Image (tube, rainbow, N blue to C red; front, side, top):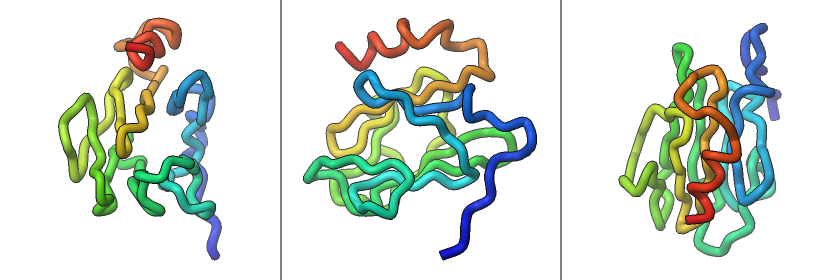
Length: 121
């Protein structure tokens, strides 16, 4: 298995991440795999989450979410998607499991506390 390239020199690992419950998962690669299988970068242990459910790709300065033909779909802000550019504060839902996308490079979300409150609703 070849190692995926890291993000460019202006590494975003401290500025771009997913919030799952009260845990932070930094986005460290150009391609981040999400799903139930142990080979994924972010493993979600929920029965309805597909083994290879979705993927976040860094493309032309933006993070884009792709559904990988997951049985129960991939949603952004309650809209079913095949592909969607993510904005800070977006709620990504994988088979009923909510994740919050935070991009601190953008001024849209003032802080984690405000954004994580959306997951508790």
